[in-house]
Image 1 (spheres, rainbow, N blue to C red):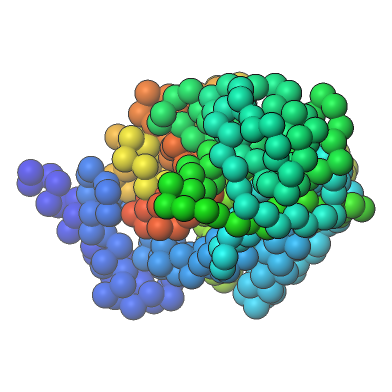
Image 2: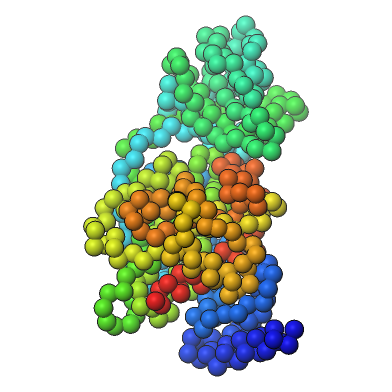
Length: 453
């Protein structure tokens, strides 16, 4: 106990002595020596940790998340939502005086839908094999799983939603006069709800066919239980799309030879129907908050933030970026810290996972592990373990040290929250300020340690 007290006193003395050097007042620096929220041990900080830990604020990051998730909402690759998010992110980074570049790349057409019920509007997918760029308004008929349908559906919109839908029910509904069909996938696991989707139909039809998220089916059936419901079903074909990466850079502050680049990254798009608060609005706003905190700190390396477009359709933005790096440019990158789903409030997601493609340690995972020990968070951190499925993959394939960092279930990184990729991935339902704060401190401290080397 005496040794612990001496360490705390020493840490406090270092913080106070260095406050002027790193631009902190003594009270702020001393506060950084206190046990961190959610940490199991008191911190034992390095000098470079203080300007990060004392300044990062999850509530500041939350202000950006309210714009991305609440105001803009779903940010589907190449569509208006993603472009509005692109403009907002670029504006914030320019105001922080970073050199900002927009990197465009073409992407495939998108087939989306809108279901309007009174004042409510839900984004869905739509089938490429159904009618496009049309709106149909009618009363909804709930046909269960589609195994039995009324003989006459003229002028009706048919809802079909079950664990296993009857494969040709949409076709039968169209043949019996339906104005539109709403298909909903229901998960076999009651704890796992399914996302909106663009149905692939074996036989094309001349009516719109929308693909609803499970929660949208549930909400619509709640309304139907109270009486007749009229909806507008719109199918839209989005063509000739361009998505964008947002790249922001600040050069090294110390003169001398080129010491390389450290990247902090996330993707800012989301899946159809989802406001993407945790996936990956949380990683995006982590980047924006760290951009604020790190912008004036002295470094030996260039600091570069990258916000990827079109991750949800196959890591398209990050693959485009890495593919277009020259060999000298790729060799300059000392590490890429990819942040994907860093703030879920789901109770079982108590572990902060360090994920590398091959499960091996590298400069990024080692830096985060070391930061976790210094900040007292290490019992909550596991890894590295092997996992791809995010934007660290293209960097690994190019031989660049990279890791993906994320809150997930304790038993393994495949255990994701039930609201994953659904309309319930909202700030209210799926964001923890405490976990976002831990993520900010870990990545901020780790990235800054690598920037100083």
